[in-house]
Amino acid sequence: MDLVYPARLSLAQLPTPLQPLQRLSDELGGEHRLWIKRDDLTGAALSGNKLRKLEFVTAAAQAAGCDTLITCGGVQSNHCRVTALVGAQLGLKVHLILRGEPDEVPDGNLLLDYLAGAVVSCYPRRQFTAELELLYQHWQEHYEKLGHKVFCIPIGASDGIGIWGYIAAAEELARDFCAAGIEHAQVVCASGSGGTQAGLTLGAALHPVPMDVWGINVCDDEAWFLNKVASDVADWQRRYSADRPAPELEIRVIDGHVGPGYGRAEAPVYQTIQRLASLEGVILDPVYTGKAFHGLLQELARGRFAGCRDIVFIHTGGIFGLFPQRGHFQLSTQQ
Image (tube, rainbow, N blue to C red):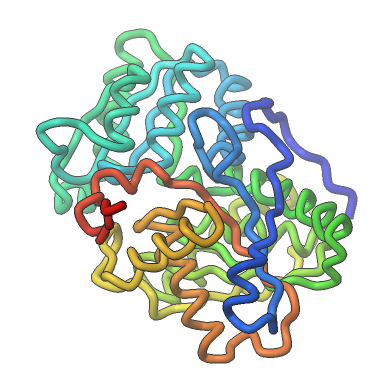
């Protein structure tokens, strides 16, 4: 089909590199060629995958004449931090609705939220979960009474607008594959709000791209993500392609690697982060990419991708999530 993209702002530094993980591939026996798509390098202070989504979301906000963005996430949300920085870049007011109690001294993403000038409202986890729609409504009405026009962005910018970022990224991957001599790839990403996986899955079908897309969920379970990816794609279909039949998609979720829960990891994940940093100079985080990459290594050991030559991991960013969890790393400072 002829794909017509909606309005888009140029915020990200694209294309991002597709980097071979040669030493790790050799260490694992050489059956697979492992690659990493460096979307941690999109720009705006190492903003990761969310910046691709916000190119389309903020364009929609500007087209609607909005001057205020409201969005939500955890206290250490990568998405909220990127939104705060992009809002500062574009001259838009940003209000963040955050889940959980902040540290007495802001660290990581929360520190950057404040530096970027975002207004931050933190709520206990139970209240956030039960009342999120009411909280959005409250703050939207607050700003509208002050004469502002508000654009509300869902968690992770994961909806029919935001997934355009990774529909476009799928097209970029097709060019990467040609340059690298990749005939067919297994593409793996962390799934937290589902939008990156939805965009890649839909993009692979629309362009088309010779790849199978897998999401390793870092929260919830397989059923939740099967539904969420399908829901985001359906939202895209309603907004942009209602007069055409929906493409047939296979949504693939690798469950079983959530560990103790969202934002919490066990010792092997921290060890994997240290292993990749020392072996390839690539930094992962314990919330998304570290957990998903550790899950990928476990799946490789179990034979899930036996016979598959090329495996591409999407590095979705999140480096600032390392710092609040610095105490979990076993670091040697001896010379």
